[in-house]
Image (cartoon, rainbow, N blue to C red; front, side, top):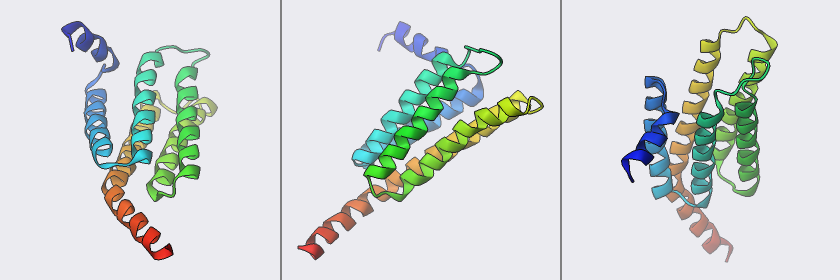
Length: 157
């Protein structure tokens, strides 16, 4: 990785809160990628793509709303919903719930102009941390799920 590539990546980090969130995301996603199975790895990809694209479009407003981020958060919820339908892992439902809360927080800010921007951003940070915690739980649970699936296959055979 060259210095120019590193500086280009730092464009996504504008505040200490964002730096902390990115550090937490990279640690949790790395652990989930290492310990997890296909659902965890798919979720890692979805979350990191969501965060990168959000960082690129979060300055584009139209009518006081960041429509790009609204769309991207909605797509993350839809992708996690699809993942929950495909894989029988409990943590995916929690991650999808946090993604839905993040998506709906945009509409709460649209409906009530008295909601302060920092309050909305704080809510989105909290739901993002909730999403990361459920992914972490999925990474911890993945070896147990593998053992259960092997036991179930032997029991049904």
